Length: 183
Length: 177
Image 1 (cartoon, rainbow over the protein chains, first blue to last red):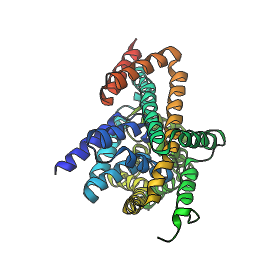
Image 2 (cartoon, rainbow over the protein chains, first blue to last red):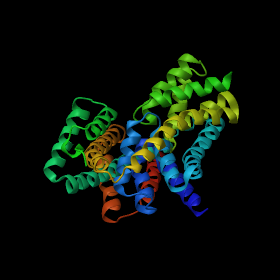
Image 3 (cartoon, helix red, strand yellow):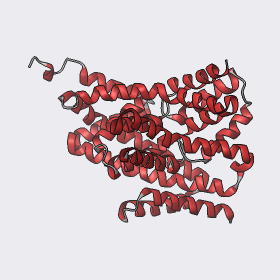
């Protein structure tokens, strides 16, 4: 049951170190699933992240549940979910029961504030990784064009990322391209 | 029946909330405060404040805690199940289908074309974190923390866990003085 121990350890760490909710834990997921345990390549991680972003619901549990499922089936999925959810829910229930005024304590505020820029740096590093890989696989011209288009659509025009990702899926699968000719 | 209500209260935000847990918080508030009246807006705000200060996914902390106050341990389990299971099952189903065709040139194209989109998404999140930090901690502290954590992560190649723990320790200290 080594796999389950690994899964538990990985997602427990992600859960306990991820401040600011699931999306801010993305670099931590990458660290565990790609770099440390090599459960998936960084491309597969990108695809998983894209799909998770396209679907509704909490991001962290979709990532943990799917990676767990991939590594060790339904058991793995449950282990990963328990590890990422239960410890923090317990903390929440116990802390709210014991001391309601905890949230105003200055050192707790200080902790969650100091972590914000660090998460920013981790996200920026991942961003560069994905840009570099785009350049390698698409060629820099196309990579830059696609990136600029994404920026314009999502950040300027305010198109929801899910819409953009679904649009890419449709474009790729629509049978109007040359490669769709009979084999 | 309370468990059915708990299920519905967290099932709906889980299905409608795009952009991860934090984005679904207003939907949770709508169910918990407006529809079922389990807590006031004020109480909800207090629970959310603590939920934000603690590590881990926000949506499940809220679901687990509110489910617990309304229906005990079983209520907590029902709320967690409702917020996690539907989207996760969908996710696994789609990924399994996609992986079946992972050698087809079309699926490979998806990977390539989606990469810049993911890069932009992550980059936008990074910026958002920097802006939040600038607003809450000021520019000097933000720049110093960015510089040090970049140095530790990229040049010293330190494990992110240690960098985060150091930031937490530093943040706790600034709260004392």
